Amino acid sequence: MDASVDDDATLMLAYAQGDAAAFDALYARHRGTLYRFLLRSARDTRLAEELFQETWSRVVAARARYTPQAKFSTWLLQIAHNLLIDSYRRHRPIATGEEAEQILERVAMPDHEQPEHVLSEFERRRRLQRAIESLPDEQRTAVLLRLENDLSVEEIAEVTGVGRETAKSRLRYAMNRLREQLAE
Image (cartoon, rainbow, N blue to C red):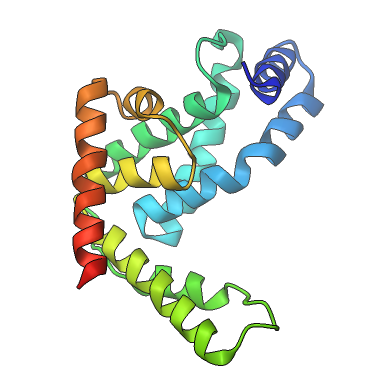
């Protein structure tokens, strides 16, 4: 088992015993990953921020019941995913690419790159972002968990609450669709 995984579980258990600094360490370690997942999944800054806060609130509320059965990051993403699904059920979001494009425009490019290369790299990333956004919700979630959070098929299945074969199938279909769209 990875040392940081043990460390995350140790931090969460310490937080459950009242160590506020342990929570601060977990928050600092996982806030970026969690926020990116929610923003890319929800495609709405306001909703992502709301779900981000609610996810951490759930972590705080569950601290006394926490048992390190899975990696902390998997558990955290599972909470976020469930909140996202609940949000979808309450009201289906309208998908727009504006948020993603704004984020991509803010990505700093190294100064030493040639303008032609920078543009082609920017266009490649924008095409990938649009292709990911066009995926059905379940496939998009599987791809984001794999590409951005480097989760295994088993961990994706655990986060999304489906069987291993379903998670594997969603990931395979999503990757095939992305390849087709990017080949055009």
